[in-house]
Amino acid sequence: MVEMTGLERALTYLNGEKPDKMPIWLESVYLAWQYSGTPSLREYLYDPKAIALGHIRVAEKFRVDITGVNTDQWVMYEILGAEVEILDHVVQAKIPPWRYRPDRNVYDRFFEKAEKIEKNLNEFDPRKCRRAKALFDAWKIVAEKIGKKVLLRQGILGPAATLALTIGMTEVMRDVMIFPDLMGTLTRMVRGPLMEWTVDVAYKMVEAVNFTNFCMGFSGYDKSLLNPELREWLAQLDLEYLKKVRERIGKDVPITTHVCSWDPDLDFIYERFGKPKLVNELQFYAPGSTYPLEKAVENFGDKIPLCAGIDHLGPLFTGTPEDVEAMVKNSIEIGKKCISFALGPGCGLSPNTPEENLLKISEVRDKYGRFK
Image 1 (cartoon, one colour):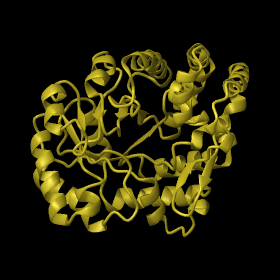
Image 2 (image 1 turned 90 degrees about the horizontal axis):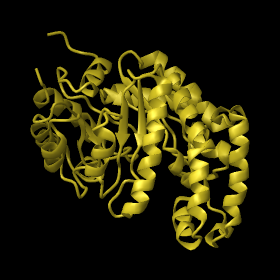
Image 3 (image 1 turned 90 degrees about the vertical axis):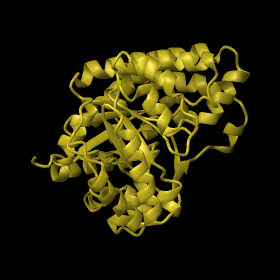
């Protein structure tokens, strides 16, 4: 039979059918920077041509079928007030020293901003910030160059996680326990203006890559992180959010998950988001997590496509090509029991991941990972 393109292969997989061979999902902020040839990370993050070039080179060199084109998780939230530090080799949140002290007024001030968002959504378009504009421009370049060959997925977190990343994830979780009335304020913000904002940005992001795939981060659904009450609160918000996203971007656009949690609550995620068929895939961190691939295949493999099987912090980064071959071959054998299966890591790849190890993935997939 004629070999599928990566895009055809990925869309067949996300439709719950078996393509000619298992798709490969890989992406990395810092690996793309490394392959862009841009010496400075700061220069790279503001240069759409460099961002695009780095991701195109990674996608083509390692023969991926699915990839995102991204920089860091805060870039969309800078318009809301999120601050970052761009260091020599990493982008990280910049938490002002005064945030180490609980302060209820932080949320009152953010609520005032949220009311402005509700009145004028366009004022808070992420593209008004230079880094986000560079990323949107990079998406257009990549879509034109490889968008017909590779599935491009872009995503954003739900409204509650948007608030937490903007203000500070650990600080919000701390303050909820200290200020008893804070949950009511947070609920009004995330169910109102931040809900509309995240839906609007989700639409803009998918539109920028020709409506290929929207991916939502589910990493907060970690059994070690959320108590049942907070988990249910978050799930209700995210269910509402994903329904709105589906209505806005269209039912034919696949919605996928990203669960890079070490202790993923996959049973809950499938029950709440997979059964209503709001998501087309479960992607999660295995091997290496508390949820083995064998267990996931047993529980969900006949119900929803799964993406997993590459330990990007173990054999892929620290092992030999022989170690990678053994890992990928084993994952392929387990994954063949699914209605459909894709090879993917738990999260973005680390810079300086050995090139010979990355090349080995597609080599082993081509040899053992054929469905037909």
